[in-house]
Length: 304
Image 1 (cartoon, rainbow, N blue to C red):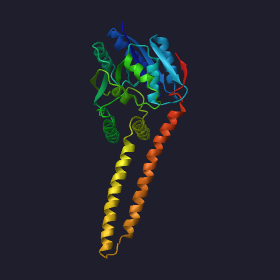
Image 2: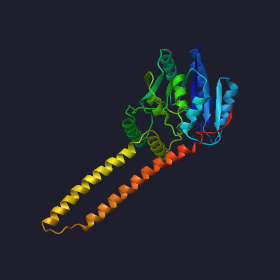
Image 3: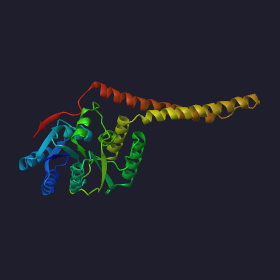
Image 4: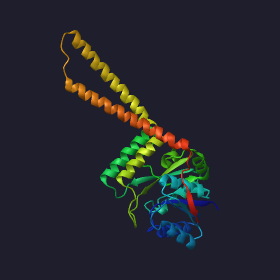
């Protein structure tokens, strides 16, 4: 019988580990699916790792990976993929906001021959207006850059073993999982789901962390911001040409060129554009620097 591995990144989720392990085991056993649950503790500061150890003692199909410190969700996902032994691997949140029954639906589609089963959000659950608009804007940018629809993208998906092996073989350290899993291709299908309410605990995402996450993944997956700098420079050159032509014409007509305030504003505007452009370029150079150092995506301090 084919085995399903379920990877569950966990960060400060002590209140959910036991519940998630019990619910997932119940759902998969009821459907007669051979499985393993791989919890990845992303350097939690609470008792998440202790709860994972307890869950592993209660159920031999529960496995745990513990990071030496917090490396981020993307690293936790890839550590889970590397630890998974199944013929197919599902990735879902540890807080059960991704419905467990949908994993069964994904597994049945995998049995039909699909190699990438994407979880697509039908509804986003209880989110603030700012969070919702920020997510929509971010994924529109990513859709343009990646040339694929990521409007409802999520980390909730099931991958065939060959897809997992391809992702693990990629040498880049700062990988964007939800975009790469679509970029690799293979036979793909989507499954809609409704984001569930949390049963315990609170979201670990803040506005600041979401912005940092978005900027990091845009820079890690696409060079679009660098192309935008080129376009902005082209428009600035066109504006400068028109303004320069106007100045020459007025000079030839014997009219004094006025507008000291305008000159100051133009200098400030162009200076700001130059500094922003240098900042974007510097960010990409920093990403190159991080990749060249060759440090590992994560460090595992314990497993169970």
